[in-house]
Length: 349
Ligand SMILES: Nc1nc2c(ncn2[C@@H]2O[C@H](COP(=O)(O)OP(=O)(O)OP(=O)(O)O)[C@@H](O)[C@H]2O)c(=O)[nH]1
Ligand SMILES: [Mg+2]
Image 1: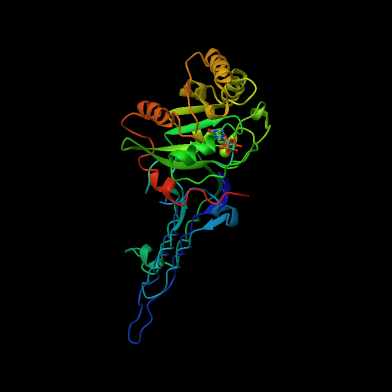
Image 2: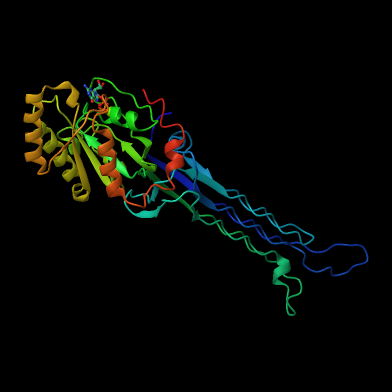
């Protein structure tokens, strides 16, 4: 399954059915009177959060969604049937934006949430409706009201409690694979991860959702590497886990590069609580470790945790530090279904 976090779709609610002009015609009944039924209501366009979805990929294949038109009214006082609604299913964390791609129409944060985006048109009245004491044989009926049409953007911002950030190759995906059942692609080259990944982490009986996103490089906010658009997926996190590779040239510089990108994307990201960890400590000797640790400490202005995703060193402590910030109420309580469902696999594209 590929990942798609934005999609433009066209929606149209159903037109109302037309009212009907008819008169009762029966043997021996003179002046049978008007008998045109009303048109049915057009169907609504509804957007609903569905369980087990984690991408908007379906909207790459179908972009037009039209609800059914109401049936026209008929003679013998028969009203038209209402048109069927159309329901678009989206993953939790999806936002609906207007065509301008900015105006937020709705933000879905809970499973099962429904939002009527466009109502169907009302059906027109048939001529039976216009019967009155002064006009006993009306020859007019209303046409059905037209449905609404518009283009909208769907944008997915994953709901996770904690987000992993760092340069490419920092070991983010490895960390996620060690602490959760997620099976992200891991490899010794930058930009292994092309799409965000979610995993459910269980630490001391407490669960939370951890998101792994593609690595950031200098200039990501100007589009370098995979750019910074995936940062949208950690926007809703309570806490960030910033991994710095101990085997890199200068842990302090590596840290700052990522911080600068977070800042350039949105200042709020840098205000989030950040746990800093020097990763891959199994791969450096004691001297180098101390050097890198000091550099990182100076840059981050706090003592980093020392961990190794591969060896499992310090991983528990890092998770506990995250849980402490997430507190009692994970934002993702309702989003776990999405994370547990087929965790973005296989994402080797
Ligand atoms: N020695 C050692 N190697 C590690 C550790 N964690 C990850 N690696 C290796 O580092 C390389 C990159 O790991 P990934 O987990 O793919 O890194 P990433 O941060 O997800 O990289 P991108 O997805 O490209 O941003 C792989 O070859 C891993 O095996 C660790 O704790 N110790
Ligand atoms: Mg990765």
